[in-house]
Image 1 (cartoon, helix red, strand yellow):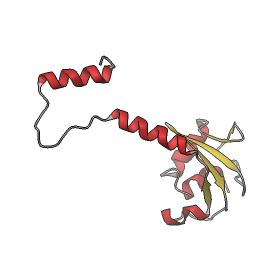
Image 2: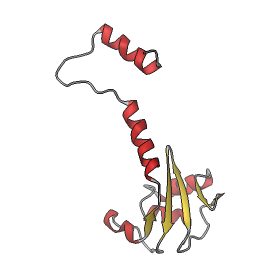
Image 3: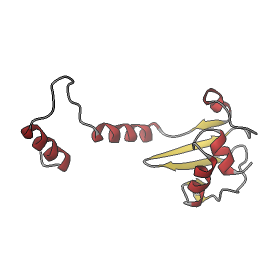
Image 4: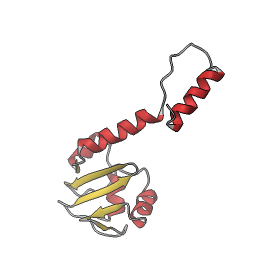
Length: 123
């Protein structure tokens, strides 16, 4: 089975064309070598998929014919991504958003200035 089709079937990418484009851009590798969309995927292959900022490592368990439901994906692939990668993404997500209490109204001019200083790193 083609690597772009397999990535689409196991729901790594929403569409097959996006999976093929990711392969063309070198975001999908096997043993450190970028894969073209038409490369064959075999049972036991370990693929690294760069889903900025997450680098997902996947082991191919089975080859499938059609796209499967989200609950059945674990039968066809094994997620070997280290927990540190998921922690890094969570930390980046937490850093991007500031938590404000609800129902306190819009920020004042002073609040906005302190928010901007925080975003720029000028504590």
